[in-house]
Image 1 (tube, one colour):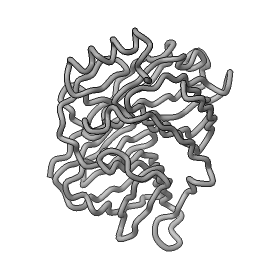
Image 2 (tube, one colour):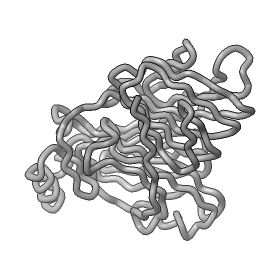
Image 3 (cartoon, rainbow, N blue to C red):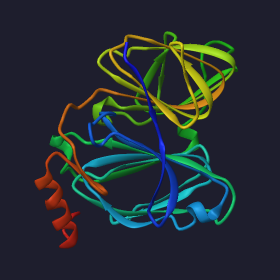
Image 4 (cartoon, rainbow, N blue to C red):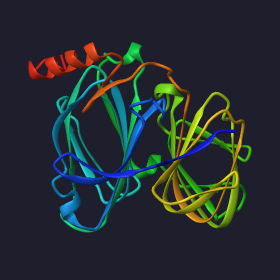
Length: 278
């Protein structure tokens, strides 16, 4: 029953935004996911400059805000704002050029961006985008009259203690599922239907115990080759990520994720020539 704890590390991106990053590019360790960034600060110097216009190819992103907000604008003419409890999905496909800038000049900012790998057959498809507002992302109590555990599912589904909880986004690469899970007062639950899937659990508040193994804040747990999983905590907030590994080679350079170095060089050349999104 392999359970591996993967630590995150401080980093920066965009125009100097401070983030906590967990990634698996070198050995494709998070397949079908690639990277998870967490922004958490009440200092506007840490996030105020945002992420000015930049390109992507070969990935999908899911951005989720717990506090604060960002505005997305892209070459397709999309403009969307998300704030506390809301999410944005983007499929870069062949190419997208976009910016993500903070909606606030001060105050507490807390959110995540997840990178999901596109399979080789879909890396050159047309780009796409969607906002997910609070009305589509309700908190759901787990079980009957259980106020100690709540889940907000953005994508896919999770089977927990015999009940399926589903989100508005479906058909992500690797049948990816993404949810925010809040536990309190010594709760315990079972996550089912993990056959052939990778399960990642990122702790953003408190601590959890995964099948008897303690996991602290800003750490990710990777679980594989298991049918079900016991999760308990006195109090915690975690992101749940589940997906079927693509099992494809990964070539990565900055905002581009392809299958070969030659494809990376083509993406760079296309961007330099102004034809990335054609």
